[in-house]
Image (cartoon, rainbow, N blue to C red):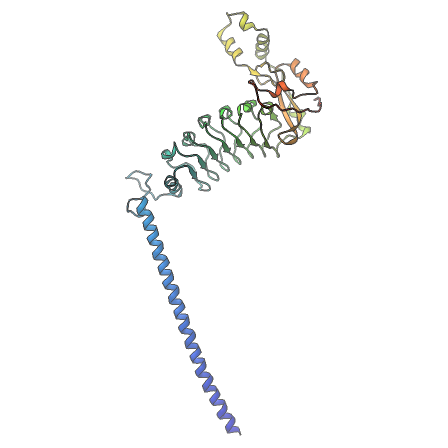
Length: 366
């Protein structure tokens, strides 16, 4: 019996060893076959990638590999950058849209070939400290996005962008908007959020096409009265110093200068028409008069400030508005008014098709 059991165990071991060996051999063969297939696939992919890269470079760089930038002179060395590739891609696609978003560049590459065609430009998330002159020469530009750049000011040449409809300069370091910006006739969307703006000029009333304004995250204490003459349908102004408790502090006035007081008196008595022997300097001062936000008369200098609330305008329940008055008497009369925003104040210098109508609560400042 013992011998029979030993023979049975030996025969079982021999059979299992053969089967295991055959199984191991089969697994090894399958593994080698799969590995060969992977190597073959990788080789084919690498070959296809090389063919595609060579085809692209031969198309744009005249049968030469991607080694030298076509934007540099023959004697200069340098590999083409991602920004230059973006320009080439824009040219091959018609030249209307160009994006340098998150390229981390300090200057723009040569875009002179797109001056008369480019309509969309995005230079957001870069290291631009100023607006390049090339941007102001893009006469067909309609959309300009420059957010998240350390830009401190906008150039006066931005007025050359007569067809600009959207301007985004949020998350920059801009402290003041240039007067030339308010002369853009087609500007519809303006985003200057999260900058260092302390005030906006009443010249914003010249932006007749403006429909959307974003001034969030600045240091504004109130909106200019000139904005009431613009048909803005969307206004975003959270994150500013517009709380009612700050109105009195931010509307303190200093006495007007003697020059501005004298000019105001001469303008109201029509001295310039009655006397023709005024000095040229006096005529220059009289011709530089602004417009009073209260009486719509001539105003010299910055005027006397007064913050009043405007209700149910721009889709918001209440908006603080900064009015500049031409004289202490005008300031006193305007402060005692209940119906602040009248039809005369809502109208522009020319006839408007649409009039705003709203009433504001009486608010007396100390």
